[in-house]
Length: 356
Image 1 (cartoon, rainbow, N blue to C red):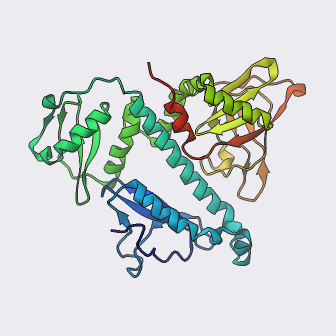
Image 2: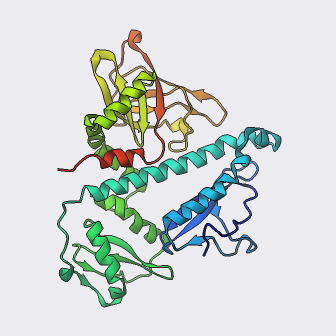
Image 3: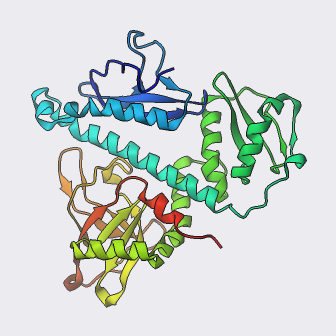
């Protein structure tokens, strides 16, 4: 078991390090980003020094905070690997875009899922909890009783749950939130991932075994009206006023874009963040630049860079099934400079909104 005081493993050839929860074992691990010559970047396990590629992975039973602190410590020592001049010298400049995409994409996905989990829990704040004495836990799952009780108090919507500690993990299921037990078969790594995703998906009424990308797209749609409520907050109004004063007419926060529509004196509205198929869907590196809006589409695609290095301007469009977006008159095409808030800004902002 590693801690932040431990000498970090050899990171030669790595471009980034991140903390990742392993649902199957119940511990946090470190993953390093590597990029073989003429290959695609991939995240692989980080092993303790001296144990080789098949040795003991770096793990943290202490929890997320300790693992992320260790990842940050390792990341500081890797900044030199991402220096453009060094990449050019090593002949890796053609891979630098792929590396950047892998780093940024993983960060965005983690932030978005944190926000979705937070919202799932909050939207069930008033959901009645099953009384502890009413819970029925099968004999084979009694060792997890306290954890089942804790999770049903925090997430009363759960029907699929990953419980236990390192070396003693299990998936427990319930049809009604009252009776809990383990399935007859041994759980797989996929089952463990499904159980962790249930903390998000079941909070929005979606089955945890549905396609994860499709489920998250539906959750973004569900959250769009909630994001619109942010426009009522004084703190958000101030944030948007500052952005407009700085010449920014689009502010990206999480999965949403706060968009200033000057035509018709509409003011600030909320649009969904989207992508172009040509931009590798979720792996685009957003460049500082402008969005050229030729229509009133509700989806915003930010500027991106193709694999060949070509820079593509951002644009607006409608989602599939929406029909064509209402076009703007050519005289009313607009160029929109944008900015993005980093970190858990959306979680904090959404947290300011009370649920009915």
